[in-house]
Amino acid sequence: MSDAGREHAAPRALAAAALVTGIACGGEPPSGSLTAVSWGGAYARAVTKAHYEPFEAATGITLGREDYNGGLAEIRTQVDTGNVHWDVVDLEAFDAVRGCDEGLLELIPADLLEPGAEGSPAAEDFWPEALSDCGVGTVFYSTVVAYHADRFPGQQPARLDDFFDLERFPGRRGMRRSPLTNLEFALLADGVPTDAVYAVLDTEEGMDRAFSKLETIRDQVVWWEAGAQPPQMLADAEVVMSTAYNGRIFNAQVLENQPFVIVWDGQVLDIGQTGIVAGTPNLREALEFLRFSSSAESMAKLAGEIAYSPTRRSALPLVTTHRETGVAMLPHLPTSPQNVGRVLTSDTLWWSDHLDEVNERFSAWLAR
Image 1 (tube, helix red, strand yellow):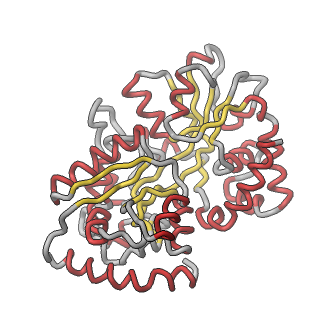
Image 2 (cartoon, helix red, strand yellow; image 1 turned 60 degrees about the vertical axis):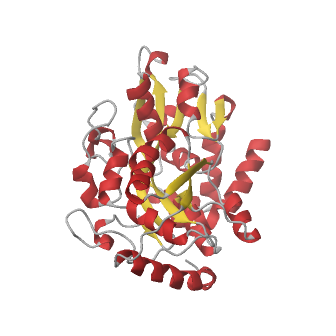
């Protein structure tokens, strides 16, 4: 977090720390209500079963639910006007960093989080980079390439490079209407090693290279904005392949019997974080929810609803099967050994520093 961000958040951090002390020492339990904001669709259903309903049952706090497509615009408006009606929000990791720097999110006290399932300190139990000043990472998720098996009766895609190969694998592609992961996919498919992607993007030549690769399939791209769209686009034959969130594809596979196949090669791994909107009148309740939902047991429950990996080491051994179907979950998680042959971990700090300028270029490219 920048010095300006710390200055914005310091007074709220003191208040939050006092509330955490009360919670940890068994003070008067929180009560009332909260509004939790998440991604909608399959993820919303999963987090409702794994986090929202158990939290309500354990605390008596009522959780209102809203969906959104990400970004800081609505949070910024609420904080700037002093009309905060969202409390806890699921965030992309770079937005957690940016929101913290702008004073839009509460600082998370270091002693808020539960110890690991075997008693280890929380700071040791979480994977590196899962925690930020204003966010708690609760899932690893990946943006992957997925395809409909019936559209390729012969040779089938096996590598990220195949997504860009219109000659061998003709048909329309789905991609998120954002430079996020698209630039990484483009460079990986163009031969850039995973450990060099962001160094290449730091150069004008590298940025040109990424956009040139995207240009090779641009005329065949159908753009999506919400995570629920790619599975529907694949099912409706609107596209033959699409980038997608791996958990959304998993749910379509096991709950809807869709013949979708995930290409794990070149997956871009990211951390989904949960933060608290600055100035919420329900700070005590929000802190209690964050403490509850970030426990190893809660993370394991979420991994039993949708194929996203826990960010705590002690949570992974607690993951067993999909609650509704009994499917073993470990082979479907993005961090499972068989799925990480070529994986790129999204650089949160790079995107938090460059998103505005890259968005501007991406929008101009789309408008040409």
